[in-house]
Structures are given as structure tokens and as C-alpha cells.
Image 1 (cartoon, rainbow, N blue to C red):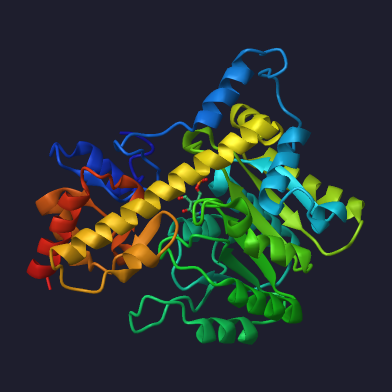
Image 2: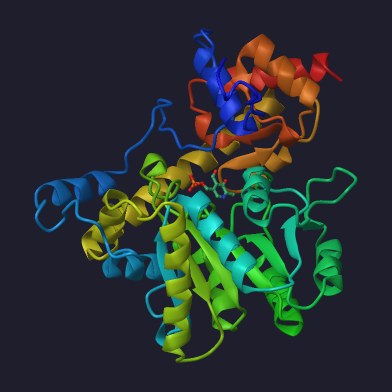
Length: 412
Ligand SMILES: Cc1ncc(COP(=O)(O)O)c(C=O)c1O
């Protein structure tokens, strides 16, 4: 008998589980609206033209783009590109040398590094998540903080209204202990698709400054909400300008379509102007965390990012590619909304066109999510009936709308 026979069956990850069910489904009409991964107008994965071009450049010069170990923090050009994409080229925090950056494993790895950094170096703080968030945040937190409980701050209204309860949110920020850490979705909140307005971000920043709270930004969708890095980077850029101390977990999975390359960065932005020793120390601490966890980050995705980021023509093309993705999602939002209304689907479907980013909270109940899956092979996430808009195409949108109509009519 195996010495490992006591090992229990693990609880499946809700998002990966939905994807596995979808892959096994033999219905030719099946539609994957669970996982947040962009698909083109034919429902196929899309390699960005700018990424293809960068790969050609890399493969034509393998002496320059070698397979050697990179520096522990990552290549300097890569780190510079990450900072510039996040903050813009001439941000004051860069000029004041207040940003420490380390390459990491996409968004998940960067969140892990940020959590380890805070847990090991920032004693006695309370950690807050939004009342509704990406479920993986909790498992990442628990892996690092173990039994230390986290808190939640208000996000949506409790009565089910699909809008941010901003007064409740501010109340929670104000009532928290000074110096608490708050996980904030920088843009395109997952799963709700509902973000703060610029004015609201400014109010939040004022509270954070007054209370010396630390902002832990999850920056997984920059460019995906509006098609513009500047617009989507507003919260992070403004907080950094105002000297709010923060950690940023930056992912290039979605906005570069580099899901499987696992490329991203963890940044710590501090408030000590021109204290480059502090920046170096913070980078060094992140390097130590990485050394103890996965040792070295992979180079290929980093080469792609730095090649695009440091070539003005390619960068221009890249920003066009991002617009292509975000515009297609916006178009699908409008088409689904129009079709739901046209066929008289009971309910208010306005959030489908007003939400931003990859996801919409449809408000379908768990029973309805199960029904639409079994009856129509349409796969949504159970949590709030979260729908990834990326799986919709002009060919399947009428099918999905009809499935939703039948579902809300038949399952109350
Ligand atoms: C809110 C949020 N943060 C971070 C991530 C990180 O993804 P990855 O580790 O693939 O970059 C995701 C991916 O779905 C996400 O939705």
C-alpha cells in the first residue's frame, strides 16, 4: 500500500474545473464563458501580431536572446518596460527612484511575492480583500499568511444591486486600523466588471494618505477595460504620484495574450524620494523571496515584453492590438445585450453593456448556471453567474442569448 494513500482528493479550483468540464463536453454548440482568456472572432486563441513580430526578432538572434539564466531580478530592459507600461514613461515616481521591481511569474506569482513581502516585512497589519473578488486571491493569501485571518471591505451593495456601495467602502477604509493593507483591482474588476470612477479613486487616495494604508494593486487587465494603458493605469499612476505606498502585481497574461508564458512583475512603490538604497533593498528582498520559491523567472516572455516595449514601432502596433481585443469585447457586449432585449428576456441586462473588461456579473443563480450548462452547454462561473465576454462571437451570441432567456424563464 502506498505511503501516500492517505492523501485526500483535492477540492477543484472553480475556474479550472469549469474549463475541464467544457473540454470534455461533446456538444458542438458548447460555449466557454468561464475562463478569462481572450478568443478571436472565430472563438480561437489569438497571438497578437506585435507578439509574433517580437518572437521573430528573438528567434533570429539567439546569441543576444540567449537561454542563459537572467539576473535574479530580471533583465534591466524588461524591468524598465514593466515600469513604463504601468506608470507611463516619465512618471514622477520613476524620476524620484521610488519604484522597486522584480520579474515574476505572471499575476499569480507577483501576488505571491507581494504577499510574502508584506507578511515577512510589514508587521502587525490587517489585510483586506474586496467583499467580492477573484477567488484565487484567497488561496494565495492563505498559502502565505496561513491561519492569520483576513478582513473584507464593502464592494457591491448587499441588496443585490449591481453597483459599488461607495459610501460603505469608504466607511470600511476609514474604520480600518491605520496602516492596513487593501487589495484593490486597478481596473476591470474581476468578477463584477464594475470599477470606481476617477473621482472616487481620488477620494480613496485621500483616505489612504490620511490613514497611511498600503494599496496592494492587482494589475491584471491594464488596457483591457478601455483599450488604453493610460486610462486603465489611472488608479496606480495617481496613487504613485501622490506617494501612497503600494505593492503592484502586474500580469502580462491577458493584455499581451501571454497566458502560458507566465510573465509579469511585482513592484513596490515607496514614498522616500531619491532613496535609491531603499529601492535596492526592496528589490533585493523580492529577489530573496523568488530565490526561495521558484529560484529564477523564465526569459522567453520577458524578451517578448522588452522587445515590444523598447521598439517604438512595435509598441505602437501593440497598443493597436490591445484596442482590437478591447473593441471586440465591447462589440460582443452590445450584441448580447441587443439580442437579449430583442427576444424579450426577462430581467434588466444593462450591466452587460455597462460593465468593463473581460467579465460581467450576470446575476444568474447557481441553479440557473447549472441549468444553462446542462441544457445548453453554456459554461459560466457559479460565483454571481460570472460571464467571460471573450468566449462570445458573432456566431454564438444568438445561441447564448436564447439559452439565457430559456434559463431565466424556466429556473426561478
Ligand atoms: C484579478 C486577477 N488577478 C490576477 C490574475 C492572474 O493571472 P495570471 O497569473 O495568469 O497572470 C487573474 C487571472 O485570471 C485575475 O483575474
